[in-house]
Amino acid sequence: MQETFAKTSRSQVKRHPERGRYDAASIYPIVDAALICHVGFVDEGQPFVIPMLHAREGDSILLHGASSSRLLRYAEAGGELCITITLLDGIVLARSVFNHSVNYRSAVLFGRGQPIEGEAERLRALEVFTERLIPGRWRDARPPSQAELRQTAIVVVPIDSATAKIRTGPPKDATSDLELPVWAGVLPLHQAAGTPIPEPELAPDVPLPEYLRAYQAQD
Image (cartoon, rainbow, N blue to C red; front, top):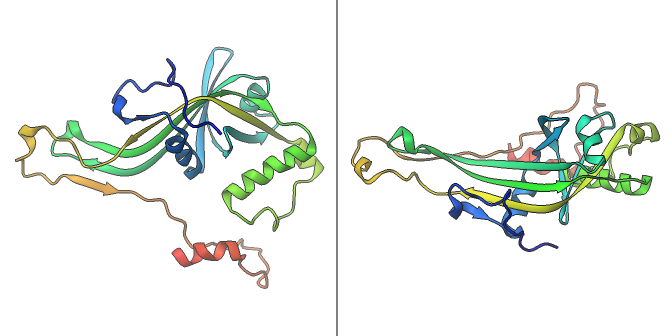
C-alpha cells in the first residue's frame, strides 16, 4: 500500500503549506472517517461536483450509483476525477473577525475511473460499501437482485496523487489584539449517531440487530 504521495502541481498545498500532509497515514484516516465525499469532474467543458457515498479499498476509492449517472458514465470511460473530503472539528473564535477560522481535516484525491465488471467483483464491491456504512449489515439484508445489479454502476478510482490539509489548535490573534476583552477559543464540533428509529411498517417481533445496539447506547 502507498506510504507517501509525491507532491505535484495539482496536489501541493500552497496556502499554509505547513498544514499539508502527503503521507497515507494522514490522508487515509480522513477518507475512512467521512461518510460523504464530493467528486469533481469536467464533462464537455462543464464542471460538476457531486456528493456521493464512497469506500476506500487499499489505494483506491470505490464509487457507485445509478447506471444512468453522468458522473459514473464519465468515470467508467476513464475520465479524470478530483475527490474531496472535509471533516469539521471546531469553530475557531478569535478576538478579531479577520482571524476567525475552523479546525478541520481535509483530503483531496486525484485519479481516473475504471469500471468494475463481472458479477462476483461487483457484488464484492457492494459488500465493501455496505460494510463500510454498518459492519455486519451485508449478511443480514437481502443481496442485490440481477435487475438491481443491472441498474447499478460501480467504478474504482486508483489514487494517483493525494494530499491532506489539517488545522488544529486555538486562534492565532495578532499580538496587538491579545488584550482585547473579547472571548477567544474553540467551539468543538462532533458528529454522533443517535438511537435507531424503526421503519413504520417493521414487524414488532423483529429485534434490533446486535450491530446497531451500540448506537442505541450512545444516545
